[in-house]
Length: 286
Image 1 (tube, helix red, strand yellow):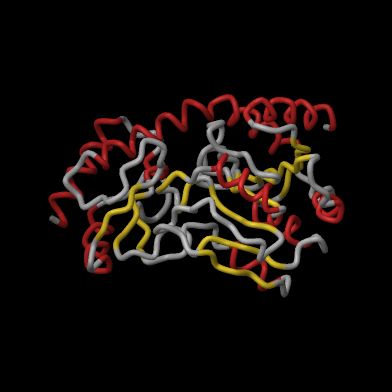
Image 2 (cartoon, one colour):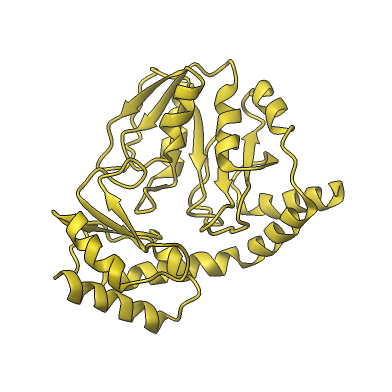
């Protein structure tokens, strides 16, 4: 088992930008909890929208103070004040907008703030993942889809000894590592496929304010998303999950009114089928 784990660590590292110490965890939530548990971390900075919902829940659970930092509608601006010990952000804000990971992490390092980046929506794209600590979910639906679990990478540049002790307690079965190994093999192709699907929706006549080549979800501006989703959910069924859509405003997507098309839930469909779904959405709500 240990040999399998070590080989998997070696497989992941080439897709990352630093020499991280890799830990495999039962869930990304447990991974983030373990990171923030460290006594070196007391005050936590988070974006005011577009982050993982655990950014708010876990500090509260640990009874640690968190500060919401204003963003440009989810996009993190790399200008920080030394008001907190660690800053949490996602590579893709709400899976919709690309954050400038390298610039963010450099600015945080210059301010003496530990950077923590959720790379779940971009692995294995090396334009992202420049933080002191990176983590990724391998739940479902995800780019690395094992149904559960995740991993954390901690750079040797920082001292989170207490966090590393907790992370080492997490144990997973051999079947998980074998599954993850296969997912890593196919990750680049899957990411490319998801981005191409997003492009199909972005080229539609829907009101889509953020059109980015690296997004894996698409936000549609809509003043009455409840009404629209009542119609759409009756007529459109994703390949996985109960609904293709996420209603907004919502912290882990965007605080604007509308809904997000979660293209990852269509993964496995032919592009022509995706195009037909895009056209169907247009006909139903426009």
